[in-house]
Length: 374
Length: 259
Image (cartoon, rainbow over all chains, first blue to last red):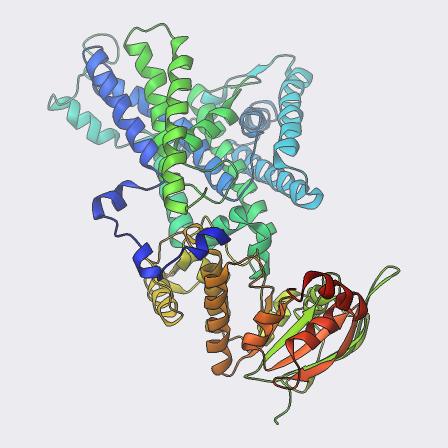
């Protein structure tokens, strides 16, 4: 640093003007934006007549992308705050199983089961964060332990109580519940009915659904995903707390010296990640009407991949919620698109790996330009 | 002369069986640059950490504006008006200058009952304050990582001044910097002093101290060797005091007086 300093002539000459276009280009989300364009271009070319881009197809990959988005928003904010959560997938399985046990086995009203599960899982998130803060251990290790602990309980409890690993029958008991539709319902059903009537989208021609539109509404899962992205983005970029998230992940000690409550920020982010996992689990249980012990496997890594494609820095302090959402969109589109394109589904992983690598290389390059890292 | 803004009387600090400070007395006045000199291990860091509320003294009293003070944590000292700029922990490189500037003191504006970070205000103030200090930013959203080490120190100093510091403690701000950057930081110290703020400047470089210092206190092995006023002491004498006398004389002989 001192060698460059000695060569330094008056500071003004060293500040290069950057064109507005270039300025608009260098942003954390650029990798995600490029990836999204490439992916859509690819599937428009190779799968445009496969039904991927008709109403049913769009809802199909939107739902999958929305699932990724919900957990990616939590993982993104936590990663920017400088921590990881590897227990997201197990938390999804655990939360789903708890809802099923409370409602189907213990006959609690579904709304009470959902609220209790949220409280339980958010406290587990807080426990994760508390252990990380108190022991100073890497969150990688602490949450890895919870990955196994929670998965173990998720398999043990239903076997102990019901002697099986899948608990079903939740559809019937949640039919008249007031809270269940917030997670398992659909909105704009009237609008889609109308679209079907005027012929804008296809309708079923036969069977007991004849005359109904093939897409009868927007699943709440998608609504949750969009709401969480907006919430996360506003929180991170437009509020005081967002600045604290960046500061906690950027340099916890420097942040503490100026009075940022780093521990509180980190624990709250662990709780938010747990909240996102529980939203995912609740939507899934309400949609399927059952909870399985293997739900959510590997979801923690998928969330992290989406976040990293979206431009976040693994070591914290840098990233974007919009980017993470784009990463999740790419994930969902590729997973479902390869199916529509008739490509062998195992190639999904190859494609994803290549995409991850390209996005990360591009993001590293952009980040160095923005932040002056060397 | 007016009363000192901060007066540290017979400060002792023991860490277990190690006596880091063995009765240090120091007075700092508003508008002066008080240089605290000492070799590595002399107790400079322990002393300023006591002043900024990181350590509680084992014995001794701290008077701030004439009143006795008991700082429990750094936040208390900051609230009282004692700001510390640490050498390598001043700024977060990945964050923008304006986000760094207002870190921990974010300006808020309320829209529909919700408090938002007032970016417009933050950006405007950051640009103004940086211009005053002679740093030309490309924009308030420029990352701190793109600034040089000296510029980062300057941003940290102007941040402390903007948020109302009455005493500014600088922990070896020039030790990792090149010639030109050092000159910039020293110029900044001079500007701050002229605003009536007390500056405590920690360094082990006598030349840097002589450039801006009004008074000089030398620490050696946890004790003060007295405070000297500007013009009443030569750089050579300061150097000798810091090294504790004899060895330095011998060393200087063999090095031809270049140290």
